[in-house]
Amino acid sequence: MGKKPPNEHIQLQQKLIYYRAEIAKYEQQIKTLETELQKEKLRNEFLVEKLHETQSVHVETYEKQIAQLEQQLLSYEVALEEAERQIQQLKKWKVPEEKKQTIMNVQAFFAYSVILPETSEEETLVIGDFFVQNIGTEPLQNIVVCLRVRPMTAAELSGKIATYSTKEVDDAEWIFAYENWRERMKADGEYWIKPFQQKPLFPNEQLRLANLHIRFKNAPSVVIDGFVYGNELPNGVPSLNRIILNK
Image (cartoon, rainbow, N blue to C red; front, side, top):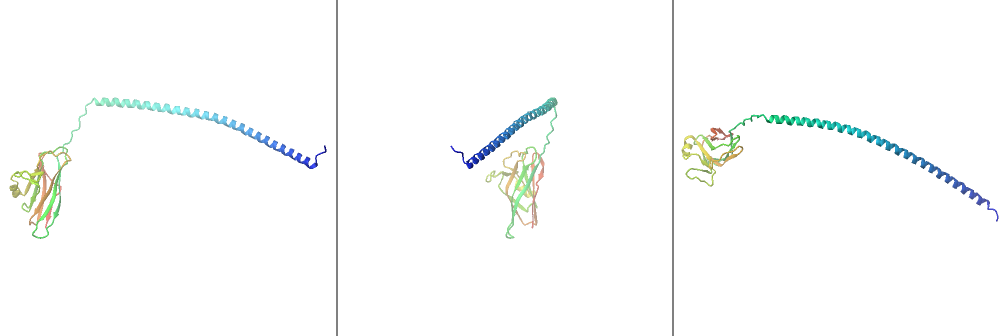
């Protein structure tokens, strides 16, 4: 057989150089990777050791804190037991109860509107309610309302108020307190009225003398005052306001 051509021989040499260079490169890469792997192993071992140290330090700290809290809890328990003992000692002594203050009082007022006459021949009309509220601490017995007109003949009062002769006026809730109520009204200008069914008026409860009609006659001025009486209020309590009309 004859010799290979020069060109083919050169190509083979170039390939050998290339393969040798590649092998050297891969061998270097392997060494680099082995070095990095060793570093990672050392690094991991270092971190693991530090982790154990850190955990052990924290555990000791937590144990100290727990011991302090347990000591504090124990002191609180001792203080609580001492306080309970003192309370039991105090309960053995009878403390006099504070005497409750008794208040007998009411609050009364008018709520009304005025209807003025359209002509001089007509009368002025007031339509309103009279409220009575127990603002005391005890029930009030036998409430009686007095409505006083001044001048005595200047006005005339009407409403759903029963009399002793009729006893019933359209389910009236109020009744004139005296049989001779007309004579009393003419004599002193006072209307004495009480609930049809007398019941105790308990604290914060309210009575309402509703739908009063008051007709005013020819007078320069008219004043109507309200008062509330009862077993516990013999001197009477004036209302907060009054009805006043001036021409």
